[in-house]
Image (cartoon, rainbow, N blue to C red; front, side, top):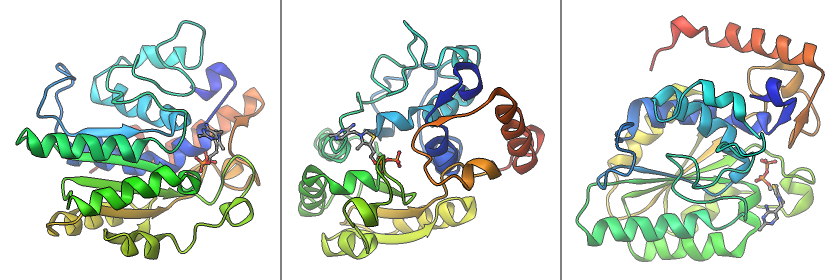
Length: 259
Ligand SMILES: Cc1ncc(C[n+]2csc(CCOP(=O)(O)OP(=O)(O)O)c2C)c(N)n1
């Protein structure tokens, strides 16, 4: 996608791909042919600019076609650079940061009231921890004992204007979630096994919402992207996209994927 349009939020996508692989191909219950199935688990993405990763997951899941990925960021495309509900499989329109967890809390309460088995998986960024609305939602979730709610906090240590330590420090992130009454773990977000184990452990805890803080590396799998000082928006030469694809193939050859 980045190669075709020449730019994009590729760093975030690569950083969070391991989580989406676990959620979409191991954990979540959904029907790619009936994406509005009322008992479905919901993936809630308010960080609209991370949508590039979700488009890839939805294509692999069969919700959209692989061919449609070529339209990423193009005029009239359903695959906007900042994701929205015009794309099948998107539960909310993102972009205005800090509103995802509040909507996820509403969905989790709704599922409980409707006696539905649905679980709600919300992905937050470390930048969204600068938003007061995130903490209001965090407080509500533990107040209502929403154990059908799982929040993944992507600590990639970057925001648009630099590191959270420089912009507005949110560390230690995990102790804040604990203090807000959440069942909390912190793991390497680029270690599939660690994510799986954290989810399995979280599912055994009842009566509390679950926070899994993920330490991730932006641009994971592409050495030149991993080493960039600023990765918020990537625009590189055509030759570099080719190298990037080769390095990704090295990390996870298409015919050797296992979950
Ligand atoms: C409410 C709101 N404030 C500011 C912005 C502008 N903005 C877009 S992306 C971004 C960076 C936020 O940090 P994070 O989500 O951690 O970024 P990344 O990991 O992609 O660097 C900002 C401030 C926005 N979209 N919404």
